Image (tube, rainbow over all chains, first blue to last red; front, side):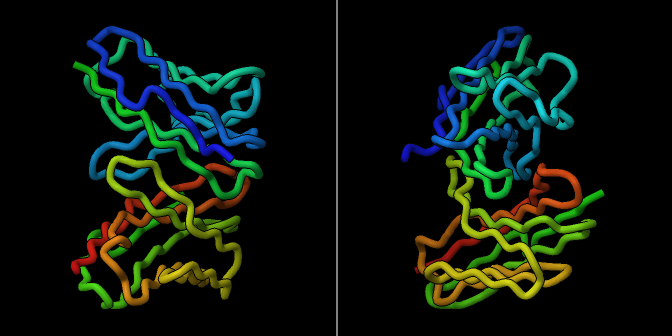
Length: 112
Length: 110
């Protein structure tokens, strides 16, 4: 059973460009969570999605950030007009029953 | 506001030297407490879920326990490969969003 997959693993963007991060949950998992982690900081919740629905986006900035989990295909976290402060590791996790979560390897975004 | 505090922030042990990591929480209506292990450059790896005070879970050299206010992760006779950051997370109330602590960075010297 493949684990949670994220791509790309590393992404470099210039200020003002768009970043698209993809996450494929574990087979049979319908709950997807996105987190952001900065060095020396904890995991910060961003958004929780189920297929075709955003359940909770309370941790996501109102501007420039959006997320989706379509009926077919991976979940996508989209960051428009990136700024240097967006540089971080972004993790996706999936869950079968909204309890324990299984994390992907992360996407490390660097904004130059 | 839900609070999850982990201590110590960093811990250095000699191989074989047993110790405990602490996760204290102040939440209303605990749904579950989770322990994860995170290696540098990788995503957190799920270890345990605890649901009620008095519950214990074990896996190899790790044992997690839960009281009404805190959880301990006991590490017995650790090995260098146990070196990692250990994260605690809590789900509470009507929310399925876990709140993570900042973690304890464990280094086990051979």
